[in-house]
Length: 123
Image 1 (spheres, rainbow, N blue to C red):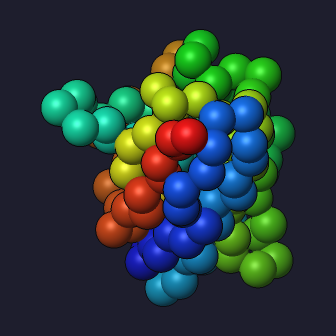
Image 2 (cartoon, rainbow, N blue to C red):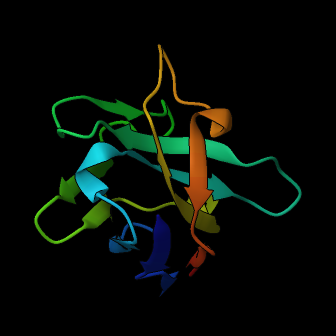
């Protein structure tokens, strides 16, 4: 499955952004989807994930209550609504597709990745 992210940009602290990921190539609804991010000098980390049905979701502690992951299987899209953004949320955000995860999503659970979209939070 091919993935293309969009929606990144520069916003001030406290504002919101909505990232989108468009999928193509295979049956989107078969895949669990995730959002990861990588800040400069840091390892890539999971932000949120959603099961193929949308019934199960996972959020990193650092974004729980601020970010919401959702998917639209009819249109092969997955979204990440990010509210109350802080400078520490600055990173390249990646969309990923995989077969699912256990207790916590890991990078190895996902085998298709987008090219990433830059999110910068700064005043």
